[in-house]
Amino acid sequence: MEIGWRHVLVGVAALFLLFLVVKMRPARRRRDALSAEVQAARERARRAATPRERAEALCDAGVQALRGGRRVTAAVGFFVRAMRADPTSARVIELASGALARRRPRLLEKILWRRLAVLPWDDEHRDAARAAAVGLQALYRREIRDRNRAEIMRKLAETFG
Figure 1: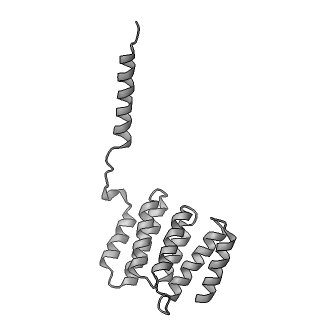
Figure 2 (figure 1 turned 30 degrees about the vertical axis):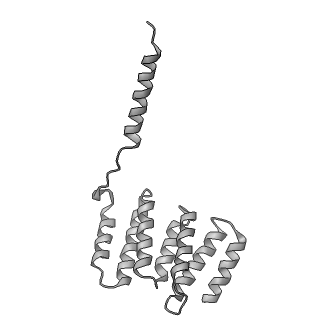
């Protein structure tokens, strides 16, 4: 029995259709996909009375999202929201730098540069700007390995310091 080219074409088309269904199916976002700790931290962020409390709760959610190792994008979102919630907090930037440096160094670099760009360099935001410069310095020294940029960030951190 001979298999004709039409049968082969139908088989390849069926395999391609199966591939499209599996790979391109709509991503379903379920609330239960996030762990209970992340959900609790998100709820604390919603109920927070001060920007500092909100930022700390969002940081906790980011750290919890990274625990499983698969929710890096969600963790990045939590850290960025925390930075927006309390722009004066150096702790938020330090937590984000520590959590994301090894996993997503280029993304962290972009986040820290944007943080430096939007922060006013006044006394109120001095600690946050210094934390961003120190985070970039460490990133350039270890993960990205660019000595010139690391030196520039060291000098910038000293000016805040």
